[in-house]
Length: 414
Image (tube, rainbow, N blue to C red; front, side, top):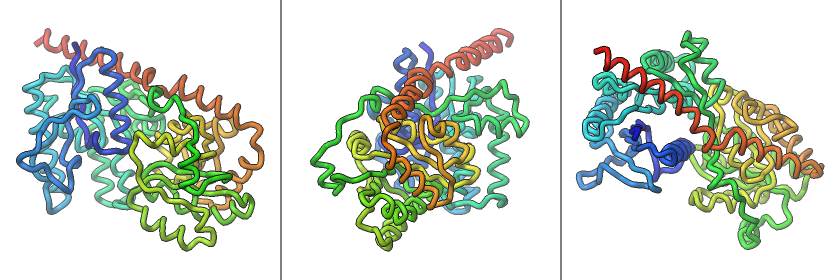
């Protein structure tokens, strides 16, 4: 039985797009009969470290995770990150000696790849590095970094070095693949393993709950929704700014905001200051097993991501979940969205960073409901056919087989 060790930033029971993609990958690989485990670094528990009584192994949702012990390092960012890499590498080393995986599958950010490569090289284990976003661009998108800064440049160099050192590379979209090829990385070394949907979880939409509709004050409303994390790059301030125009065109329009994150307080304050504050409903975070009930409340899911390198290169997961739920999707025309959404066929695209364009697109959709059923059916069929995790997982198999054959050949020649 092939044993695959996934080296991760964080995992379940934390909830994020990152952990949900990880869960889907691990579940699909287990369904194929592979033995699978994950190990997380210090960022999984920061800022609260594991105490001496905490278990370094945890089973969550049927998945087996190991944790890196100790406290996250403090002080100078570069020294801190180097110490965290060393601690993570030590934990990976211990697990490798005990469990003896056949393949190490490291997932971004690049710190995980560096830690994993130390161990993989020492033990002669093939390693694949999966990039979900470039760490330097994610920092810019989150407001914690500046494009072109020394730290940005250094992180980019580390990323390129890690990709060159890996035996194979996986990326989640063509935007990331194209960027790596432009850096001189052999295109044959890179596979695209796109974001997908667990159709067992999201493929059977629940009916709208009238009691929840009443509780949220959405009875008779034209409901626009956003369900996800509230980061600056998501452009949710533009969505709120679009509401006055939308409500003047569609007086029954309401905006349902489900989730939380760094921008939550600022967005709530912006909404309270809006002349149509009573048309904007914040729910906060909800348990993941309840999310589908909120999808059922929404007519159109809106994803107004701002235009920047991060959003042009990286495809999000949430629009796919919305399509699987049979919801209409409207999104900004950044590169990551254009990989997922065909304008006028599987969704509607509008100009990024432009509240007026958002309002016009949403008002137009509400004004003409005749194509809704066909569009929702086409979008759902696209997810089932091309973005279903049960199919996506097949993309890893030939890469794993090639890496294992190479490793066997190297051992035979030694």
